[in-house]
Amino acid sequence: MSKLFTVPTEAIISRRLAQAYLITAGSAEAADEAARDFARAIFCETGTGCGICQGCRKFDSGNHMDYLEISSDGAINKDAIADLPFFLSVRPMEGGYRVIYIKNAHNMNTTVQNRLLKSFEDPPPNTVFILATDTPTKLLPTVASRCLKINLTPPAARSSEESEKFKIALAYTGGFAEQAEALLSDEEFFAARDAALSVAKKLLLGKVPIFTLAQELLQHGKKISDCLFTLSACFMDAAAWQIAKTEPQFTPDMKEAFAETKLSAVQLSKISETTLQYAEKQAANPGVPDRLITETMFFDIMDIIKQTR
Image 1 (tube, one colour):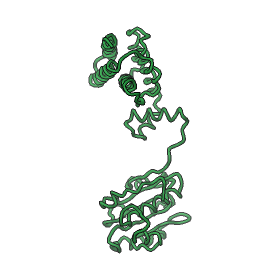
Image 2: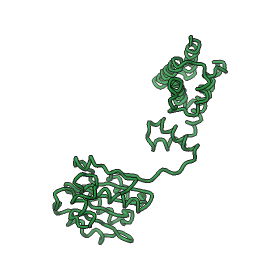
Image 3: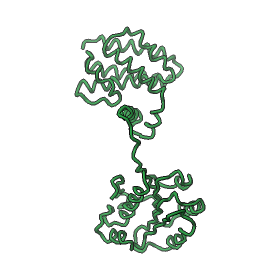
Image 4: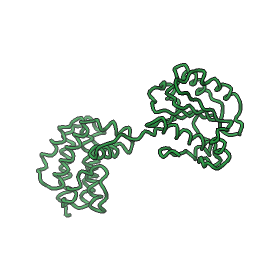
C-alpha cells in the first residue's frame, strides 16, 4: 500500500467519483503504486482496498473483467489503446465501475492523448480513468485539465530558516500551500512585515516616541495594508502568548518581545482590534491619505498603552 496516498473511500462508496484522475508523484513507481491502490479500492466491496474481498482478489490476480491497463516500455501509441473502444462499449461485467489505468501517462504520444480527450468528453456511465506519471508536464494541458489532480510529490527540502518562513507564509494565506509558495518570493511583503514587527517591538517595549512610528510604516506605501494586518496579528499573538503561552501563529519570531512587554493581555487585545479596524478603514477608503489613517491609529494605540494595566 502507498504511504503517500489516502484512498477516497467515501467518494467510492457514495459513487461520486470523478471521470478521470491524474496521480503525480516524485517517481514513476510511487505514482504506479498509488494508482493501483486506488483502482483496487474502487473494486473493493468496502471501498478501502481491503485485499480480502472478492473484488480485491480479482484485481490482485489480474482477473477483474472491468479493469483495463494501458502501458508500454516505450511510447504509448495508438496500438496500445486499440482495446479501449470495445472496453468502453460494453457494460461493466461486475455491475459496478469500470477502470482504465494508464501507467506512465507521460509516454502517450500526442495522437493518443487527443484520442483520449474524446473519451473524457463523453465517457460511458460508471467509468473512471486513472493516469499516473512522474512527469505531468509532458501531458497536453487539455488532458491534464480534465482530470482531478492528486499530487503526491513531497515538498522540496527546506532549511530550518526556510521552513519557518514557509510556516509564516502559510498563516498569512490561510493554509493554502500554493499561495504560500508564491508569497515566499514577494520580497516587498516580507520587507513590510519586518517594518511592522520593528514597530510592534518598540510599542511592546515602550522605547520610541509615538510620532516616529508612522513614518516607518509609510515607507512601505504599496504594502501598507500588509503592515497594518501584521501589526494587528502581532498583538493578537502577543495576547494569546501572555494568557496561555499559545505558540504565535503569525509572528513566531516575536516571542522574546512578548515575554518582555509590560502591557497586559487586555491592552494587547485592544491594540490588535484597533489596528485591525484601521486596516479595514484603509482598505475601504483609498482616497484617504495613508498618513492620516496611520498617525490617527497610533494616537489611539497610545491611549490604550496609557490606560491602567
